[in-house]
Length: 461
Image (cartoon, rainbow, N blue to C red; front, side, top):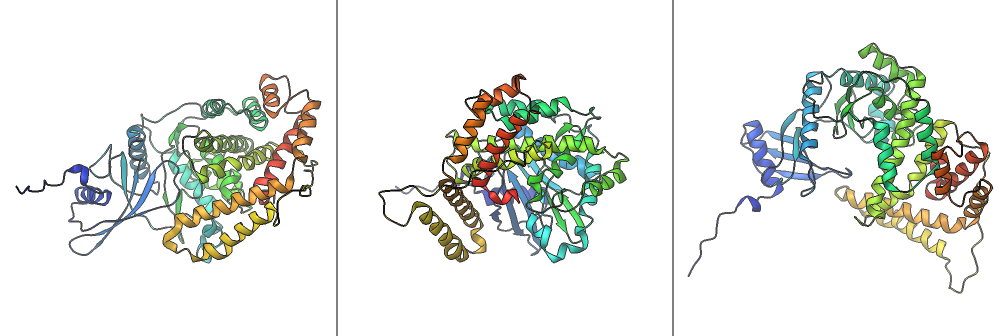
């Protein structure tokens, strides 16, 4: 007996088909076949470029942000859409929201569909490419002006946003990791002791940095990624933009693009408010500590066994970069500290080449012979390959370094009657030890510098 196949149900709709249906409803246009291209990066959201054509042959382009299916946060996605709409009314350059909902057939998760805005977000290109030369010198001030517009956005449609104390929140995340770090304890105590008076709460973007806005030859085109937006002290956004991690190797303090004075000039033009350098410094210090804790929090997904990931493992080894940055911004780095020289390879029963030589050889082969064969369409593979090469370099440097630094740190800890860095951290937290003590700064500096010399020595320069 022949059986007529059943019509496909909603469960059989592909993601591209589901996006097409949403586009048709949002634009009122007849949309043809939809193609999707997933962007690399994005720790918590899946982001896709959407390309299609309508029945007249006109291009229809959009960007889809969705939660990973099965791990959605509808309230948070809805708040992100509300922020985009409110910011647009306030004059902030943002993508127009085409659609947002808790789910849709084929999309199967909370999502946000926005217009496609042309522009560049890659820091290296913004720092170096000639096409941005005409605007580069004024970008720091432009970003200050954009932040001013964000902070002037009315809050009457944004009641769902969090307004918790950010210092309490980041300390809670840090304590939850149960990995005491002396540098973090020093930072937390300093921040508690030097906190400036709070300002009136405004809309705070929460992640305003290079990579999260689009730049064209005429300036800032769009501010992206509002998932961390909240109500809070507006200077938080300015300090976050000044954190060294967001300079991506360039020397200028504001995203590698300009000076703090330029940033504050632009901000004052929009708001009439010019924060004192001390206030901006406090929030830059907070942002540095925040990134340190969030980096370690991200790495915990791998280290705690929830998700096996070379990318997250690499983040765990780079936490020391933020430790170094935190000590530097606090003025607590003992620059007289010298990390012990690398030891000679120990005698071994194994044949040559030595282990470090093999690691170097594999890294060189991946970099020089395999990486150039990957195409532009293989961006994810190229990204992972770079991470693998970096981890091989870290392993090689650790083998070269040997136990000398570990031994010297243990000796300095012993002079403070501490058996470990965790015990030193506990003493700093209780107040039994002071971050102003030169011996405390010396041992913390040596431990951090020793980790950094292995993980990423280029960060020192």
